[in-house]
Structure formats: C-alpha cells, structure tokens
Image (cartoon, rainbow, N blue to C red):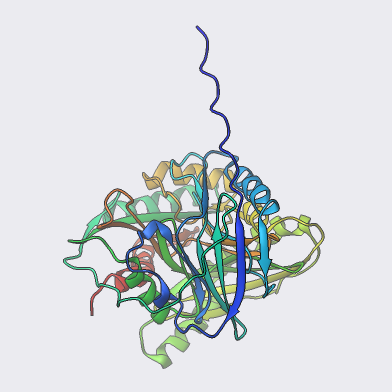
Length: 428
C-alpha cells in the first residue's frame, strides 16, 4: 500500500502595495466596513493611534509546534517578492500582516497571518492608507468614509464554559496544593464563558466600546479574535526591543482614595511580587540572547486600568541580531505571565486542571510589516467569535496562581478580568 503524495505547496501571492499619506481620517474604527465578516476586520489601536484593516489580500494558516516558524517563513517570502511603493516609510507602512497564534501547539486553532486589502494607520500625527492586491494587480485606491453606526448585540445570554465557577475554584485549590508540594512554582489557570446573542455580532461595536473604555490598552482584532490587552509581549522598531510585563492584579473599587490605598497594598504584596518576579525573569531570559544590552527595572510600577490595577515592568533592549518581531514573540511565548514556571511543568498542570482548549487566548496577537518591525501583545481580555455561528463568542480570563493564592479571591479576579468584554457586549 502506497501513501498519498503530499499536497504541493500553495503558490506565493505576488502582492502589490501602495502607501500614501492622507489627511487625518478621524476615528479609525469608524472606518471599518459594516458588511465585512468579523474574521476580515483587523485592529491594533491604542489611545486612538495605530492601524485598522479589512479584506484579505493574502493569508496563511499554520498548526503544530512549528506554526511560528512556518508563518514567519511565509511572510518573509511574500514580503520579499512584493512590489511596494511607500511614500510614508514608517513602521506599519507598506504591506502589513496581522496575526494571532494559538497558546498551545496542539490546538486546532493554530495560527493565522492575514494581509488586509486596505490598511489605515495613524502615528505621531501622520496618517496613511495602504492598499494591497494579490496576483500582481495594481490595487484600486481606497475610499475612506465613516460607515453606518455599529449595531449593539441583542438578547445576550451567558453560560459556563468548560468549568463552572465553583469547579474552577476547585481547580485553583488543586493548583495551590501542587505548588505547596513543590511540583511547580507558579501556574496560570484560565476559564472560559460562552456568550450567545440573538443576531450575528457586529465586531465594530465590540472594538468601539473597548477602544473608548480601555484607551490605554491595545484594542485588537485578528481573524475573529477581539479584545483589549494591557500586555505588550514585544515591540521591535528600528533595532530596539520593548516588552511590558503584567503579573499581580487587584480589582478597583471606583473610589479614587480607596484605589490608591489598594495600589499601595498591591505594591507591597509578597504574593503578587513573587508572581510578578517569575514573569519578568522569564521575559528577560528569553530576550537576552537577542540583545547586546538590556534594561530590566528592579521594581515594578502599578498600572491603573478602569477595572483593575496590575504590577507592571517595562523591559527594553538593543537588538544584537536581525530577528523579526514575530520571531521575538515566539521566543517569549509562553511567558510565566500566561503559563507559569517552570514552563513545561506549568503547562502540564494547565492541561490537567483547565479541561479546555484555550485556542488563541493568551497567545501572541499583533502585526508585522515587511521589514520585520511590529508589535505583538498577549491575547488577554478577549473573545473569539465563532466563524460558523457569528452570534456566539467565547470569552476568556486567567489568573496567576502561587503558593499564597486563595481560590475565592482568584475567582473574583477572573470576574474582574471578564468585565471589559462583558461591557463591550452591553447595549447601554
């Protein structure tokens, strides 16, 4: 019996990209077309600046342990043969690929890189539009105009995902016992929530709500994965690298004076400082082989978000090699902030206790241009729209568990981390 021959590789698209400077187009999310499917809308916005995109000039899907490598190779080959006219010449101009990657190599969610047909960006007061076509065609000029207002979800219902709240608290308790027994130092446990509306979700509504309420996070959309992450896994720009690490969380009360006291408590918490130290160490150790110099602050600061506060550390470095932003993201994934430490053992505990496939939750999400510059966050505070049933979205939240963790407190923290997406799905 002979085996079937392997399928021939798909021919590489010949991209033609044209970037031109334009007048300030206003709110970038307002430009996203009403009739596009959630999988065909892209976003990377922070404090009003960034990029949005729509349509598909090219895309690739990879799975398995080498999903990063094969996606990187595909983009390097595609960008290398692209015909580009770029009048702006900034990071993010010319052809751009938006991407999201599964947390685990065994996940069927795999990885996607999507090259939009239109990208609109704004940075440091400069705005541009890039039009991209495939098969060597000259791209048609993009007409930018505000679209009809997004539609709010209707009749939204919530249901437990893989575990109920009580079952997830039991999983946290089990993780604490393993940590106290010396099996592992830290484990990040996630939970999911299923949400169904009475009509297909308008991804523009979710993005607009997230961008307005959580402006100092990165509001992202790639291949139906939509959210607002406060954690920048890595930025590569002109030979410099930067990463923001978050670990250690406390919920805000809405009272400024009380929140300041809580921030001081967080900054002194031995449990949270221990969790944070593991996360910073894992990122610094992963970046160090690629950098000739690095700056790792000795102590974190407290990052204030509308719903929670985090211990945060910004790590910076000067690159010693020419690796792309995506290769750097691969080297950092999974960090202790989303997996635990030691990594292999923590991942095994996650498999034992979570009872679900995270999909692309807690994996890298972001963008990369033809020069390898780009920004990749960690897909947190997010949900995955069901491609087969666009009325359904699966939400995720996770918490870092260490020896001093309390299951009830961790459940409350997970609820706080679900608030951004719950708020985005509301119609008030």
